[in-house]
Image 1 (spheres, helix red, strand yellow):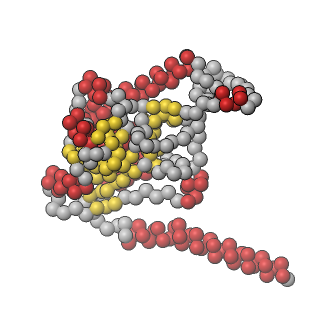
Image 2 (tube, one colour):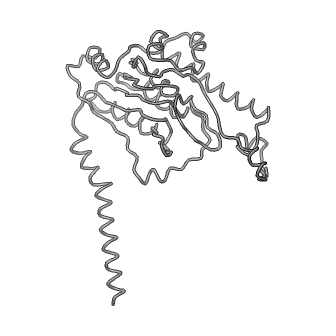
Image 3 (cartoon, rainbow, N blue to C red):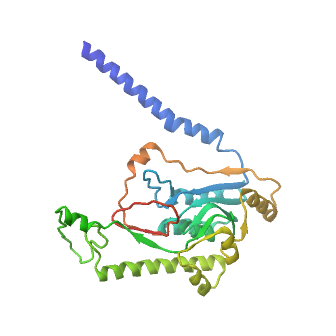
Length: 304
């Protein structure tokens, strides 16, 4: 009898928890989207804040952006008749080459004008995205450019040897373990990786040159991976205007004939269970993640 009562209480507790979770994660967000997120806005405000990844993979202490989410935001804004202009609010050091290319392609395909506002950082892959917009405004002290590609990983074969830990190499395909941290790169392996980086860098440079209507030879001299302050970037033709949100709003109103600006704000949220489920060890190329970024990938990460 006591066991039966105990089981009933346990079921009641589990059902209550289930209802609470449903209300918190499903019902309330739905209500918010209906009553708060449905108001009309003539400018779509799309934030690009954090490292750019394909799926928004999270690492502790690292904010990331999902290219899938941003592309969906851009497409949704284009399908919304109320929206007249898209404003990308950028604060990102860059990230995955593939993810950056996906977002930049979506920006270029936009049927509505896109304005990019670089706040603290619009470097590497984030600058690639900004370059695809119709107009770039940057804070005079912001970090821009950094048109380069980097690949790095920790190599600890020496430490393993010191502690008597060996690497037993079993591969089918001579280059299958290329970039493993358990052994030093051979000269031929290093050459292979450097060629890959150069090819990605060429893609990056050609895209930016075309987006900004700059001579390829000129941009090749600029695209050393160095970052530029917004003021320097303006002199070099990498951005169109200095300023912040006030200047962006004034430009949009004047250029696109809007009497006032009402934002249709998009927000990318990662749930707790998404965070737990996203443990990535994918080999991928990133375009030059810029200053002050920490990004750990296994076995090898390439940043733009």
